[in-house]
Length: 112
Image 1 (cartoon, rainbow, N blue to C red):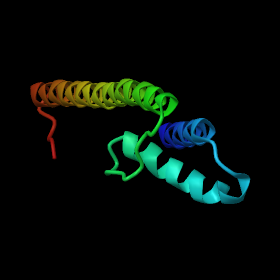
Image 2 (cartoon, rainbow, N blue to C red):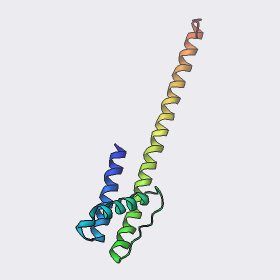
Image 3 (cartoon, rainbow, N blue to C red):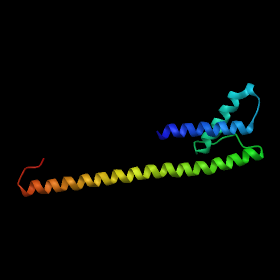
Image 4 (cartoon, one colour):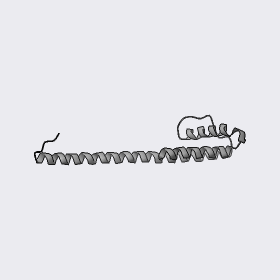
């Protein structure tokens, strides 16, 4: 689910870059692939040789940089809360096993 959201957002960012930079229709795929490459680089997935050239592109690149920081923070928060939840589940399981072990020992029932 997060991967689909990431890919969709990357596509939308690339489309925005393409729309702002403009150009002729006969070179659309070349420009879109460069925009997609730039969009992926904004997530920290590598360097790029595509740079903003005009005022609108600079503003767009700045907005995308802030957006990518916020999205990365949200992603990191999701991962960390999932890890904390997993730790809590493991702690609960260990406590239940310890209670079961104590009960079985108090009743002199063998434990594997």
